[in-house]
Image (tube, rainbow, N blue to C red):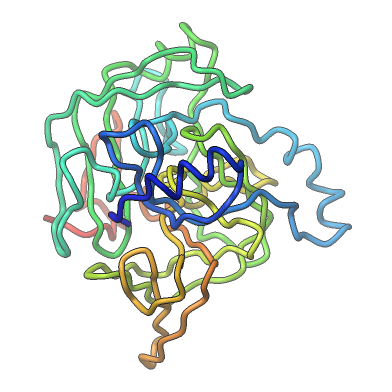
Length: 301
């Protein structure tokens, strides 16, 4: 996740395709770095399912996504968020501007003035949004950073006509047709949820119940933090975060799958995301983080 991929990404820019694991791009360069390895492809849903879901698939675009200096992200809301609540931006824990959180580390309420380029449906930047703080960030059990912005959902909608993406409050389902929408690259990847990983281990970090994509979503560096959107509902079900680039076992940029019995497997070229439904119970009235709330299972500081 942290390995610089400047040369590889330069090649991607020239060639327009390629593989680079899902991680953040170095903040000091305009070229994205680690994110999953992904080449755009078609959804693998059965013909009957895709026919039913076609309108929703067409509705998935860049509106509400954001570009960070080194990653992708999205403006998100909980199912019960109010328009008057301060807006939130979701990205990866490893995209945090102060560096990767250590294993076991949870960051809450850290001051931040990070900026985000807000995109419209066509992928055009229409505004610069700014964080007031890091509401929550960790790379333990999951890989998320949630920023609280200085503007409300209503202010963003009034000024730019763009609504936040809603987090699903239910566990995703295997076989679901999804899109990974990268605000950094302004690129959309289409595939399906292949299944779920009991434990996904990469370097010193371990994530629980991760989403494994089918091979069509081989995301590239800079797509880290992209929302994973259910084609049928338009809701965010996960956040894109890594992929096995070189076929190594459990190393940085080469996550391995560990089952409940401790058996380890690797899938070179396959990429992963972290589920987001478990975020919903942890944010209450006013989009205030409450890690002690009923149903909130996010790691605590």
